Length: 280
Image (cartoon, rainbow, N blue to C red; front, side, top):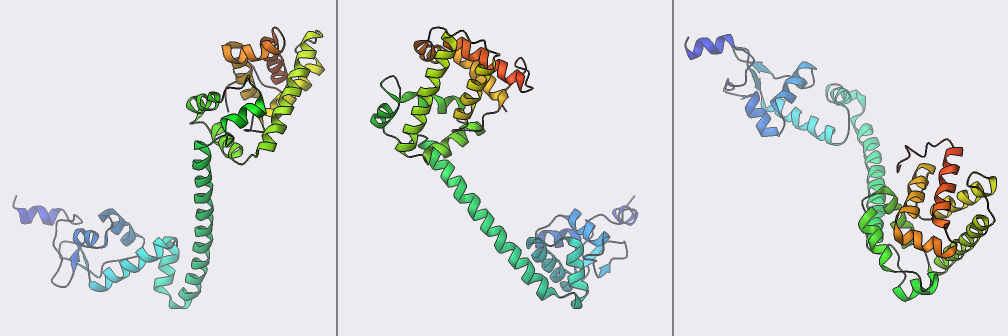
């Protein structure tokens, strides 16, 4: 079989050169920066149909066809759907000018939204590097001599890639020293109430204990959205990790494990299975 025979049997391939006054589909695609498949699709839906075909059935695009393709690309970049682009190009009465004005308005709104997103990301980037803007001396003044400023760095290393840390970083970066003092006072008051309940013999699934668990969860939600499932994970950490256990057991002997049990009982009362709970 000669090469001419093969080409006659394979119309629709892109190897055929264009006519004397036009371009084949492959060369057209390369010129305008789209794929051959895209031009085939636009031809099939009637958006851009080549003006000519060779005797073997190959598409040939004229200069006018290429100009239409360029217009399609402009409208597509502006966000118009292909069906609407076809209406604009084929019917001058469709009000292309009005459509463009409307599209411009939508683009301005989109730009404003994107700029707002950029500013939000900038704040998060700034916050992630300065999660707690208090100096080490200020941290000790607020939280007491038992506070270790390195805990913030350790927490970022451990949870820095989580959504909860992003929330904490952004919220913490905007807090003043006075607000931190209020949080520290609320934490100390809650620790004292937890100790009193534990020492008085309150059982973990009692109404008093569940109320304390909700206060504890609400306090954590100052920094990030703490679900009951995540609260379970944090409660387990209090009992299993020495640093947290020492803190609570210094407030009252056995408080770390009791608080864990309180948190688990409260989560179960709210429909969460403590055995399968994970961070959300």
